[in-house]
Image (cartoon, rainbow, N blue to C red; front, side):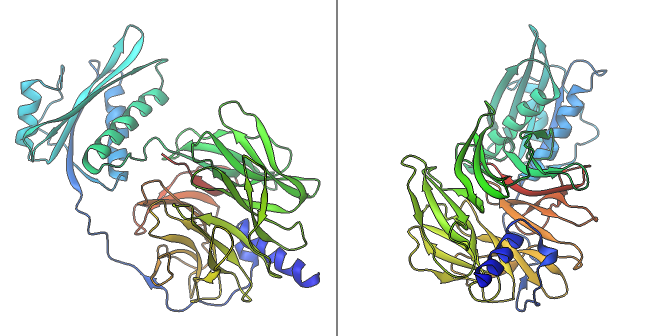
Length: 443
């Protein structure tokens, strides 16, 4: 029992991000990728969105949000606006004047439009011209009320996703959300918050007396699963984000943690110590059947599903130190994936299935983020920095080109976004005492 308890304690530590308290040795052989993706970005010029009233600045705000959205896509390269081109007062999508300007700009893609009020509703007309094809590419009109900054941003995000979809076939990520844990005072209990993908509009969604940790999204993004404490144990709860209702899936009879929905939403994989040691289980949400997948005297936890639902990767210290393993969805054919370094944990399988992101310990740098191919053959370090800065809890965007994670860079734990090659770093959270455990929603 003493051995099992020690293993479980280690498992809990690397599950909830208490990495500074785990003793590890240096890793060798981690490849630090320095080359950028060979994907050629599409030059795009924002010709301007006219609002009919220079005093409101709504057009300028729209342009700022759109520029930031397009840059984050990693699909477009936003060109600076030529100073001699004025905004159009009546920028109809098929108007001759704006199309002529777009064609003369030299940009591969040009976008413009107008924003204003009509019958008490906010109306946004958006247009795109393809210089390569020398033709009108697409146009959209968005309307809604009440007229707020949130509504304006939603319209811009929709237009960004429409452009991404038109040129790549992917749905885009501008309308996705991020759930995370936040403590707003020292020693405070953590609650769950949800914010836009770029950090805008954080909103608290739990008000529990006990700490709420380890959130993850349902495939339909209508709810989140998370772990909360009850009577010194942990239970797994599902929170409906629309109604606010909560449902307990795994009661607090023992330590239960790190839940993860299967891609089809039919199963929940999680770790539980109901037999004195942490093992991986699945719960069928329809039949309530529970199946134990692992049975090892050391700690197994942090399951993550392959996008086809056929395999799970997980963390285990069964070899003496935390490493990442993979198994079939029924628990068979367990195989170790990581061998380089004495600490590898918190795996996250990419939506496209081509990478598994995780926390790795790097010589001279401490706890950073790495990714590896699902067969474990290729290993790439994504973040770097001094050993005092801890990167933790990676989660993929639906496009597989971005990740969100928590980091103590700057001296306090915050949520950050970056691209798969480690560039485009943005801090998403502000204020508070501690922000951690982010999870990126599906599209």
